Length: 204
Ligand code: SF4
Ligand code: SF4
Ligand code: SF4
Image (cartoon, rainbow, N blue to C red; front, side, top):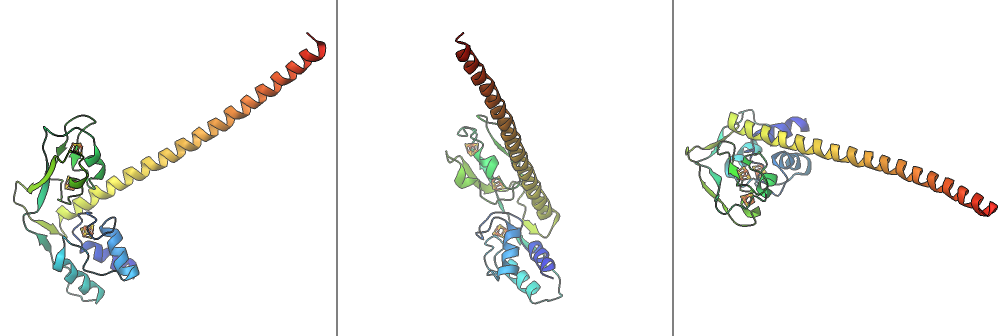
């Protein structure tokens, strides 16, 4: 039952993964509402609309989920002349909406940016700002747009987890290698000590 509620509440959230609710992502907030009785008014971008939809779900109302929206949501923009290519914004963007390489100018993929604003504060040279999205679109949820945003975020999480696993297994292999090397070093030292003591014994 709780799992169904969490999924329903997740569906009622904007999928910006912006952390303005103080949780790591929309799913963590949905879980906190169901499992810990967290306040339902913490999704700032979703505002009253989200609060209303969540309260309907918690009250078992069968009216279904209404579409919610943010009119003309803003997206991030980079001042290319100022960008130093530090890659920080790529790391913090939850939906892979930024491309670029170290020491190269970075770019926003307009259609992929959901306006979460997470990158803005992180830029060390303040060359990022929020602008009206060029198509004057609204951000709607639940919708294909919000589902794509959620999928991009989940892909990023999956990629990061895979990298972490690879790192753990690499460090394990390194430790195994180190154990073998230490063992060989000790064996060589033992043989060398034996030889030295034989030489000493025969006074060679
Ligand atoms: S969109 Fe709302 S629920 Fe999702 S992370 Fe942002 S504030 Fe939290
Ligand atoms: S580019 Fe910036 S504002 Fe846009 S989704 Fe990524 S972190 Fe959020
Ligand atoms: S955080 Fe700022 S300086 Fe660093 S790559 Fe992104 S836009 Fe460029």
